[in-house]
Length: 384
Image 1 (spheres, rainbow, N blue to C red):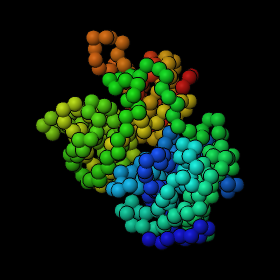
Image 2 (image 1 turned 45 degrees about the vertical axis):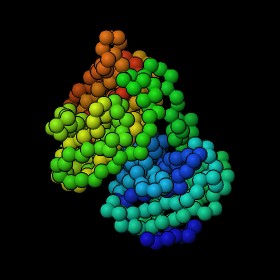
Image 3 (image 1 turned 90 degrees about the horizontal axis):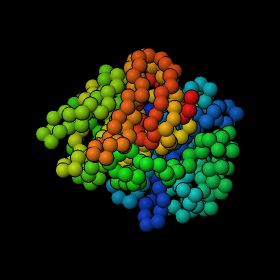
């Protein structure tokens, strides 16, 4: 691996890359949340949609995705960005890799580094941060164009003013889009887990496979709780994910997609009496991740996405706006707590079930989960 010094730069492949911000975990050490900013020639985002982070995890160009926390052996923590430099729009000159840590000074977080590798794990670059002090937001590095090729620069610049200072420098609207921690849920939560379901935590489970394979998750997943199932696959005719019954047979269809490039999320419930088992079918290699429900994106005002996804809606009864740019089916299911005291399960409403491009409104009963099926870019907003 090429170890870099602060301010150094080197050429990188104009292809797909995995970027990990890493740190040393320990008692009292917070998680670090990575983000990516796509900047134009003036060094600013074109809109708040050019910020990719845990609550807006995919850029509309599909060139940058937030993959979430990794499950690494030992005491290291990582938060991952997937970047396809070939897909970056011509107007974007730089992709900045930054991070925050719950307003904690980065000087108190040991082992800070950024690592760049190919999806197969071949190392490309590594830069260790050794001089962090009072900064509460940090730019680790940046990818930039130079004479028709891409390079990576080791930046290592911090902001004592936190996310607000970083946002101001890059033209982000702090009030609307800065990556802040989700607000505590104040309403009646939808589902069997109660309000604490969003706070249940466990190490993400990651499994890589190919073609058709049944995956049995480890027994440390919380029994009876709902979890996020995240699947990533490229160059496959179709990708489907099923839950499995007690005999290992396919049971409920959780996700299906027919895009060439899939990065989708859906919902599964861990059985009370056995580990969660999932059946994945695809024609090419895939990566499956099982994540805590709290890592699902929140629908606060407007959320953009592409393909299948899962959103947490914490608002009250109202109207949601839906726009879809794909050519195939677009569905949105709303899962919420049943009002029937004799019914222990959830109720569901099919808010949208249309084919092709659309722009529609639909009423929502209250807080719950939105399961989205789509084959192209979409947007969901609160209010008409």
